[in-house]
Structures are given as structure tokens and as C-alpha cells.
Length: 325
Ligand SMILES: NC(=O)c1ccc[n+]([C@@H]2O[C@H](COP(=O)([O-])OP(=O)(O)OC[C@H]3O[C@@H](n4cnc5c(N)ncnc54)[C@H](O)[C@@H]3O)[C@@H](O)[C@H]2O)c1
Image (cartoon, rainbow, N blue to C red; front, side, top):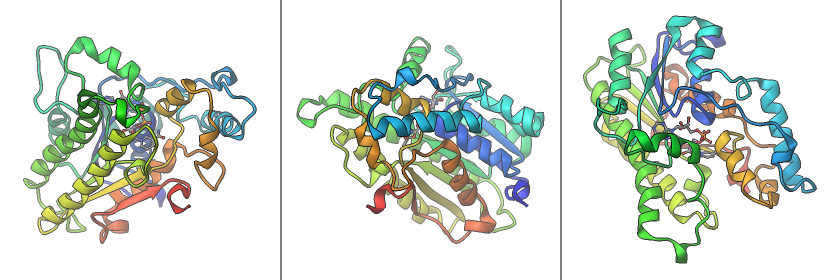
């Protein structure tokens, strides 16, 4: 039953080489998606370090949660296997079930000169192989890569540096970098997906296509030092609602997921650069951090016209109860 929930569906997932995007790509494939187009700036996957030395505060309960999450990641093997996402899907379900397409989600136009393409290219690749696109998953990103030279640096630094700036010290340039890039990537991916959806017929559940935008609990809760980040994540939720209303009559669904604290390389990097991780103790009343597969399962439900066909315009919290407090 589980292996056929998304049978026949073609999906594009941005940010699919790491963390939440990887968790979603793997879950869609496990649920039977016919083709998962793994779209990312980089192909390789960086496994989480499970070294206890990376957790600076060893005595706090927050540090214990981090250690436990790292071990669980290893046991679950999704985040610890140092294999690109599409290759993992090949190994598990067959070579025809996934491809990798290099793209920069913040780019509206492709530039053959530097070999980095916009998400439009990934969508065209999906359509050329299966005849249509059913699901577009946009995992928002924090940085804009404007040239090939910048890409490695930006990938290495993704998530660091802009999440902890007191408002009174923030420059407009920093605001624009965080707010503009994070939400603009979602806009660009959605725009190209909708353009494709409008050209295709309705599926067996009566839909032309389905968009899933990854926002954050930061879209609904304030976090100190994160005003631009919170504003960008809120913008994705407002955008999602608007797209849902604008295209409902044309049979396109659009929903958002708000992950809580999920153990990914991004969160790991933030934890590594902080001396005090006691804030993680408030991460969830379940007393554990989330895993990328927790978000993957929510995406599978939203992707299924059979299971969530009457759902559009929502922002689904998958946060272990963080926002319920
Ligand atoms: N990890 C969490 O706890 C958490 C919680 C809520 C929301 N989020 C949000 O989810 C998103 C993904 O987070 P993550 O933890 O999985 O991060 P991650 O760093 O593990 O993965 C991000 C992926 O995006 C790719 N990427 C970066 N810039 C890109 C670009 N311009 N074009 C295409 N791909 C690009 C990277 O190569 C990487 O594979 C972020 O927007 C983050 O704010 C994360």
C-alpha cells in the first residue's frame, strides 16, 4: 500500500541534496513517485558528523537532544549515508526513478556560460521524460548564488551568518539578502511550476498540479535575532495562500509546510557555532529534534490528490508541538 501512494507522479524537489529537501525526495520516491527530479546547486551529499566533540555544551539537556538526534540520524541512515540523493533512490527503487539537475533556485534565467540553470530547466527535464509535472516542492534557500565562483562558498556557508543579527545592527543589504533571496526562490520555483501546470490536463483526482512550499515555524513564531528570517518565512506562507486562491479554479493546489527544529547540516552548523544549546530544550514537548523524514512524510500526504485533495492554502506545522505551546 505505502509503495503506491504516489504511483505515476512526477516531482521536482529543490534543495534535494541535503537535509529537508533530501528527506522529501527520499520519501516521495519511497511512496512510489514515478520520477523525482533532484534539483540542487550541488550534487553531493554531506553526511552529518556524529562526533560528540561538535556539541560544545555537553552538560545541558539541549546538548543531549543534539547527541541523540545525531545517533538517530545514523541509525536511520538517510542523513549518514554519503551518497547523492538521486543515487540513493537509484539503489533503492531503480535507475529510472530519479535524476539530478543542477540548478540555482534564486535564478530566474539560466546562464549556459557558468553551467548553472534556473528551476525552469529542471521542470523541462521532468516533462521531457514523463510528459508532465505533478508536484513541485520548493525548499527555500537562504543565499543567492550570482556566479559559479560564489557557489561553493555560498553552499559551504548556507545557513550561517545571517540568522543572529539584532535588528538595530542589521543593514538593509543584510535584510534584502535574507528576506529577498529566501522568499524569491519560492516565487521563482512556483512561477515556473504554475506555467507548466497550466499547459497540462487534470489528473485522475482533477488537479493540474500541486505545489508544496517549505517555510518554517519561524513563519509563525518570533525568534530573537531572526527578524529578517522570520519575515521571509511568513512571506512564504502569505504567498502560498495567495497562489492557492489565485489558481484554485484552474485546479492547482498550493500548501506550505512549517518544519520545527530538524536535524540537518544547516541546524548542525548553527549548533556548532553556538556555545549554549539550551534553547533546543524548548524545541518539542516530545523531547526530541525532528528528522528530515518527518517532513518527507508530510510532503507525501500533501502530494497525494487521493489523501489531501480537499486541502489547499494551509501552512502545516510539522514541529513536534513547538507552536502548540
Ligand atoms: N533544519 C531546520 O531545523 C529547519 C527548520 C525550519 C525550516 N528550515 C528551512 O528549510 C530550508 C532547508 O533547510 P535544511 O536544514 O534542509 O538545509 P541544508 O543546508 O541541509 O540543505 C539546503 C540545501 O539547499 C541547497 N541550496 C542552497 N542554495 C541553493 C540554491 N540557490 N539553489 C538550489 N539549491 C540550493 C544546498 O546545496 C543544500 O543541499 C531552509 O530554508 C531552512 O530555513 C530548516
